[in-house]
Amino acid sequence: MPSALSYPMNMNRYNWGYETEPEEGLNNRRLSCPRGKVLGGSSSINGMIYVRGNAEDFNFWEESGAKGWGFADVLPYFKRQENFHEGDASWRGKNGPLHITRGTRENPLNDVLVSAAQEAGFLATEDYNGFQQEGFGPADRTIWKGSRWSAAKAYLKPSIQTKKLKILKNALVDKINFSDRKAIGVTFTQNGRSEKILARREVICSAGSINSPLILQRSGIGPSNLLKSHNIDVLLDNKNVGENLQDHLEVYFQVKCKKPITLYKYNNFFSKGIIGLNWLLFKKGIGASNHFETLGFLRSNNKVKYPDIQFHLLPIAINYDGSSAVNDHGFQLHTGPMRSKSRGWVKITSSNPKSNPKIKFNYMKHPDDWVEFRNCIKITRKILNQPSFKDFYGEEIQPGEQKISNDDLDNFIKEEAESAYHPCGTIKMGDKNDPSSVVDPNCKVIGIENLRVVDSSIFPRITNGNTNAPSIMVGEKASDIILEKMPLPRENLEPFKHT
Ligand SMILES: Cc1cc2nc3c(=O)[nH]c(=O)nc-3n(C[C@H](O)[C@H](O)[C@H](O)COP(=O)(O)OP(=O)(O)OC[C@H]3O[C@@H](n4cnc5c(N)ncnc54)[C@H](O)[C@@H]3O)c2cc1C
Picture 1 (cartoon, rainbow, N blue to C red):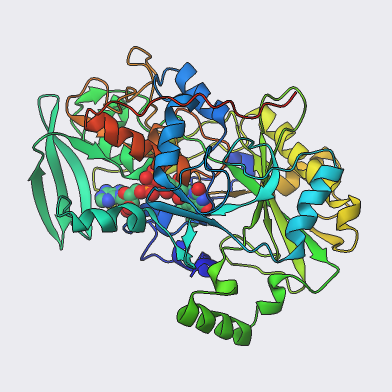
Picture 2: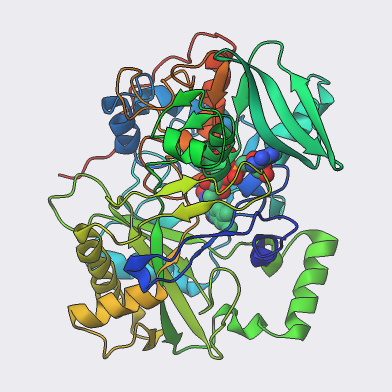
């Protein structure tokens, strides 16, 4: 049930349940780093928001060495994956396996936010996944017929019927096996037994941005000193395996709502029961929404080429993971910078696949992070103080109106900023002669034969928005590369550029 999104992300059954090392930039807090441990991966436990990213993200990928991954190259793959149920067909896909719908946007706060943003001098957009990302407008979600539409439902289920795919459930991959530097299969454990499986053609590692580098490291591909310290034979010394870790950090800017129109009215046992029943019987009603129905992408200043701040509206004051609801009518804007210059890492702590890794994002390490984050908070206040919010915006719950100085804001960020759960970049794709690349633009591990990585770990840089859509696009595009098909023709549609 989409509105119950906080449950699977908090269940050990579906979540690898990682946490970071103490993050110095955040008062040494350890942040939660959930990852989906279930068919469909994190798309089966995520918030279902669907954002392709900005055209310039992919142009940057190409310029930084990922040849063939520019916007014109990836656009046809985004279209191929989508079955978008509203909007302009020239920019969107209508026949793909991934259903994308919008919410009813019945709550007045949705339209109020778009108007207030315009009053504050920002833009509105009809479709941030189409011609114009910049602006505030309706959110796309991977929800179909009232239910979560995960990558498992979109891709795995139909593939099982073709009988070309065999899924081994509850199988934990330990490592990849090699003959010299050629991948020949994997070792995994299932039902307590260690098994080996041989690959007829090649091995494709798609364990996500935390687990893929761990599998490579356990297999002898990674920084030699790290591998040796865990008695792992070094097959390929590459210090970049597990580096370049990036994420989006955000704060929940919470305010009281003057009118009793927020989801708080349903935050009681009785209402939840009725909502659950309506959803179980008809897949309709409040339960059928993830409640992120309006998003915004804006530029913090005129020197910025394309949006660098994202907003999510949630018409209740509550944490993303469902904890600490405020006992009153309220709403919140999740806001955070999109292109932090801080970089972190992921490292194995032993050769045992069951041992948890060390993960460090180095959140807020780059001095620009502080300027960018303060901007997010200041711009949020600017938007909330526009006439459209007059009848709705009560007092600020957090950060709190009295928190104005840079020190106040910095302390708030240190204490309250949370991950948006978008880790990526740990097996960077780039030119094969660039020493910082781990895979080449064909997703092949450089220096190794018959091994590819295909998931969010190969992003050269994080995209401008939530990362599920570009992760799936990586899979779509890589599938043609693996099958040695001609890539889909480049599409030279000109996206919006601010003047
Ligand atoms: C709680 C949460 C909320 C999020 N919200 C959103 C959102 O609203 N919108 C959005 O766009 N993005 C969101 N994201 C991010 C998005 O879901 C991910 O970026 C995306 O799913 C990453 O895809 P991936 O293929 O790289 O990895 P994953 O989806 O994580 O897939 C990796 C798969 O490999 C499996 N695996 C890993 N290690 C092993 C092993 N050793 N043996 C066997 N199998 C293994 C995992 O179990 C998993 O099934 C969220 C993520 C989380 C965790």
